[in-house]
Each structure stands twice: as C-alpha cells, then as structure tokens.
Length: 318
Image (cartoon, rainbow, N blue to C red; front, side, top):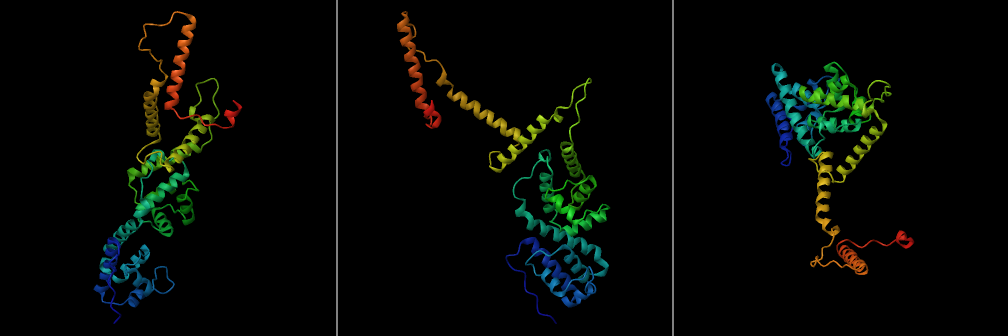
C-alpha cells in the first residue's frame, strides 16, 4: 500500500482545490496506486503516457497541471463506462481553475472592437480571449484547430497572438472556436479583421472625370488617422483618457474644460467701465490721458491674475 496522500494545502485557490479533490476522488474510487495509473496511460514513450510522479503532482493541488495530464489521469483512474462524462467534468474543472489563475492578467478593460485597428491590438485582444478560455497551450491550440478542420501551427498562433502576423479568415475562425467564442462575437472579430485589412490595403488611384476619390484613400487622411491613433495610445498609457472613455469622449471633455476656462477669464479682457461713465472728457489731451489710465489699469489687473512671463533668451533679445 502506498503512502497516504497529504491533504490539499489550505492556501490553495478554490477552483484548483476542486480539481485536485476530483482527481483524488477518481483514484480513491479505483483503490489503486499511481504506479498502476501510470501503466494505464500507455507504454513509456507513447504520446499519452504520464509517469507516476506526474500524476501524483497533478492531484497535489500546488499548481495547475496541463489539460492533457488531467485528461490522461481521468482516463486511467475513471470508470471505463463513463469516460466521456469524466472527460467533460475534468475539462470543465480544469478550465475553471485556469481562468482563476489567469484572472490577474485580465485586470483592466479590453478595447472595444471598433478600437482595434492594427495587428498588434488584435493580437492583444486575442490573447485576452485565450486567457478567458483557460490559457490553453500552443500545442493544445494547434490540436484544437486541426480537429476543427483548419490547423494553425504553434509558431503561427504565437506570431498572431503577439501581433507580428495578421491572421487569415480561416485562421481567425479556428482560433476563435478554440477560445470558445460564440458565433455572434466571432462575427464582430471578423469585421475587425476586415477593417484592418482595408486600412493596410494601398489606396486606389483617384478616378478622373467621374465622381470623387474616397477621402479615406487620401495619404493625408491616412497620416491623420495614424497620428490620431498614436495620440490616443499615448494618452491612454498616461491616464489622460479614462478607461471607460473613447477618444471622442476625451476631446469633448477637453473642449468643455476650455470653454469653462474661457468663460471664467473673459471678464479680464472686457472694457473697464468708469462708475462715473457720464463724464467723458471732451478735451483731446484729457481723452488720451483717460485712455492711458484705462489701459494701465487693465494691464495691472491682468498682471495680478496671470502668472508673470518667464524670462529667457527670447526676452533678452526683445
């Protein structure tokens, strides 16, 4: 008889604990050892083979084991007549534990689909979808996409998720299905891919004699859009744009702030009215002296409110 199994550590996360308890229960029901379970996974060197120590660590609850190890464990320890049910249960528990582990990486709000305009931003959002799906390994992604009918190699999937390569339509569909994305949400991501491809497509030469060329095809417009996108990225990184704001919301907020500032300062630039406004001097010399006093008063009032002009090389030359 083997040594008694140590209880799951008290600090283990709830969903990882549930997975470890389930695997231990399968083993206890069969009343067998890890060495026997290892023999049931296949001969050494076979693709599905797992050693006794690997199976023991999977049920220990100290770390999240690979999904393939969990399935091999359930297949070896479970009831042969209930393999399909136990496979579904083990997969569901593993995904829940994987999402729990990936939750710290999902902090913050992802981009709206209309804000995804480059391969890099698309790769970041696909990475978030991968985390929500339990962060399957690249080997598992390749296997899932192959089973779906369009294989995405591990190296290609990696390049797509880090934003170095733009996926094709079939590749995107296979990845979204591997990440458990619904059909309705998948349609939105296909629209995102179409928009990125349209932006990367070279503009058509303007047609002469009939109609007008598309404004978006103008290089100046393209340059403006790219500059605007860079400005939005910088302002989001520096916290100037709130997480729940679009770039348009930020611009509107800045316009309102400028209007309020102008409204509060406009009194500085209005003409000063003399309380005795009925006695305007008639003599030209007195009128000029009166106007000079008014200008000096406005300059003094403005100097009291606005900060002094910094001195520098420009002031010296002036």
